[in-house]
Image (cartoon, rainbow, N blue to C red; front, side, top):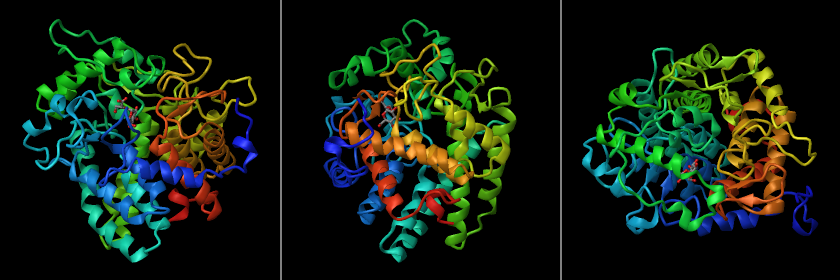
Length: 458
Ligand code: 9WN
């Protein structure tokens, strides 16, 4: 049980050296894997979180791994959710490079094999945070110059290939949300009828390295694989997928992160002597569209919109609060969302922490299964930045405290029981280690509780 203090009553935040060691163990020479066994390649948004933490002590590696991710960027600008490591055996992860077959697509890079879907675009904000942490600032400015065109291409991909006329980007796979197995997607996923013969035979690999109670069900996995094959067999053509996919969703979290990314891009443009107006306007437009299309005034939160059925998906999942990451959100809306977030847990147990991935009182809640109830470090960390930015430092502090207390008591796990009774999923999970570092070292440096993403870089 979580007692609120580290093992052996060590002071809070005393596992910094262990966190660095986790990142070093997971370093492959070009990037950091999320965790040994379960995730042996480079993941998209994981890299964004990992580079923030790593940049506190290894600026060069943090830069290298972000650049390595962008080596996997396609000609259309998409940043794939996985860049495969060619040295890892083909059957070490499913679905691997042979399933995604990026090498058969003209727009995909030829030097590396990748998946074909994307993940939330956290990277522009990561690059800004890295500048704040950099020991060698002139090197960090050079790095921003190098990364900037890639970030612009990533932004324009979403704008030109994934944007609905109403102004928000849609996703076509739960893996694109980063919150794969969230009950938020249940309705859309359950409605999918897989035509006979459309599902290729496959064997799950995740269950060989993790407890089945932590992972998605076989039924959900069938749908994950079916959506992948549909996209792949259509040549990863977005217009076609928008028309034919049984799952097309405007996700508040993806779009909140996109808005934050556009805002960060405008900041970077100003620093690198480029014109940032396009991105600043886009950031505002995404925030406005979030409010117009996804905000539910009665529930004081944002709900995803299912573009296939035309209905909002009114489940009480953590995605509903992530638009707080958007700097241009109306302050009144931000205040109501921050208040609702604080009451989100609905948990009578006093050790129950902010902020679980799903509301405990809702059907579909499962305190140990993947995104269906457990607490994750990355969503808490993103929300903390959003709450700071919008002037809610107390909620931000509580969110950061949760990260520190869980790690101190339970180690660097992939996710945690919301009552603090156990850690679940992978051990030595990189983004947990990286974000713990960022919180502990950022606090020591006095970076938080100020208005400004990444602790006041602007
Ligand atoms: C599929 C690597 C990734 C994270 C996702 C998380 C999980 C993969 C999986 O692991 O997804 O992308 O195999 O379950 O849901 O957010 O990026 O850590």
